[in-house]
Length: 271
Image: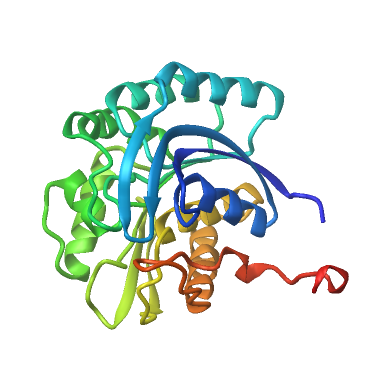
């Protein structure tokens, strides 16, 4: 098959392959897209946590974005980990030059093990400069709490936080409910005209490393292929749930999900 869309991924690298740019590439490829990248940081991590983060200079990130896009114009852009003010400003400046409207922003702030990936000043700049450029943002509950300066304990709190984000100039929001303790996972989709709750039965597993990165990349791929943003969210949630159910069980901590869950391997390539 030929790829149906071209996706530029702007995000950090995860050496263990479960999250970050590695998860993004796997997701885009598994769903029929062509993945390009601009690496914002190199992390040393595994399923038990993050050991170190090495930043890529903002100028080099800008070069990756512009030089790649000049040759192969992306149909959509997925943005993940942006760890500093300078990086956020560099990416914002680059986006102004590319003029791709289909931008999905996953405001990555905290790693699965609790490691903080962005400083407070950068969060302020993200809110002021980048949120309104995105067509959709996909914060989880802890990220939404940081962005809105509120506490989220239930579904009503999620709806209130999503409405606050709308006031920041955000066009579409998918507030992810995976961090709640409820039996069901509620993901809130909201814009000025539409409100929808995606309801999924919680899958009992510790192997959920990279679900946020995977979800946003899946949404970007479906959206780039012509699906509506609402339908893209629905299909991406189904893909992530299917990938979690595989329960790969790699590593000693929070293991990765199975990005290949959507692929049927041609008979002649099977062992």
